[in-house]
Length: 617
Image (tube, rainbow, N blue to C red; front, side, top):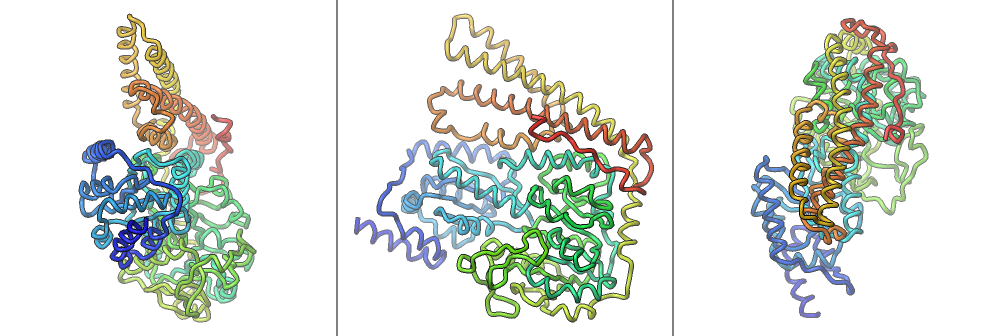
């Protein structure tokens, strides 16, 4: 044991120079516990098969390995992918990580920046490594490498970490077509928001509308408290965009922002909108929490690359415009202001850090009174202090924002604050000097209102007509999917108790399944509106065998998973159809046949409440 420890210590010396945190973790090998040694042939076969499937697709930007089952797999993945693809390894079990580390040299790949290790069970450390792989300005395509050999506890940890990162950094940064769980919510929100998305303009309608005008981006950091009086004095000299989190303190101070920016799908954001909104426009993603939309004077929506419903809608009307999702919504607002032509970009309350006592947000926000334990936070350089406290997540956001600012040559960025973390590339000033960069007074609301009312809805009629066709297609899809599930079940019964005359019947059943599948492929529009809700079952269908599935033959496993897929398709098509029926009825009722009119009365298109998801299912 002593000799093994010494050998490991020697190996870790070069790693410690490249990645000291990982070297320290690997050096803390638990006294008890043993690693699983993967079968070399099985490992090589699975890895070769995975790389073969990937060869038919464009190379991903990032590969995430769920479990480090062996050094050979990692080496094969690194060798089989282009140098431009980076690999992130998640390994929950330290003993497993040490065992894999001994098998192959990884230091060259780490030195080249191609490999990042996220080992152990500390959520903050693992999430920080996940964020390290992200470039918010050029959202990466990501594929998972899941050998299916991880223990259940480890698998739950990996999924939780990735789902949390997806929610924090938002949709188009994590373009994971296999992952997992948020798809049904995003589909539900998009469909429920569809009456607004169809009848209101996108953020493209705002492009260039404020050329040369200064923008004031308001976040909800603790420093906003002292900045509000200065903001009120200069409000007419800027176009003001605020994160939804900052809306409540702004309204409480008597300040009306020109645009509120929101991108989050979670119902947890509801308290952000408990403020007067009827005289304000909302710039939002299509997945934003649906009850927020009717509160506003009107909306400008933007799309996220991974949402197929938005692609469907853009093909039938004017493209709405692309959101940059950047972890913190204030950075999304910065990008929108730049698209609007604003320069300079001045920020308030953009702290990306907390008060010394752990207070996270400004007074009056939905997080009023929330404090984190400073002892559990990390320290980063501050604007007016040597260091300020923040989280590992915000630390990553600071780095991403600095990269973004660096990429925007010709734009002047000013951080007007009394506190917060230092952000390279942003000039540091105090809110007392806001008047220095303001323009002559101008009516930003009038320009935004004109951009909204000028939106032409001539395509609404054709979209409404196509929705009727899709509703009929989804009804047939429900029937087909239910029949497909029954057929798979019959085949399973045959496999369990084979009979002499089963072959002919099985051939007929398989032929029927082929016909059903072809009808699915022929209904492309319906598939685009249904796709996100099937992400979880699609991942499950393609995943390696679980321990519980090892007792099945290949044929039985394929039919079991196919039956589950058909069952999920039937359920998803059913609740999607119910939502679309509400959308069509809403368009019929609110638009009253006048499909060429411009949007002059936003209150006339407030959508009805649709059936809850649970009820639809």
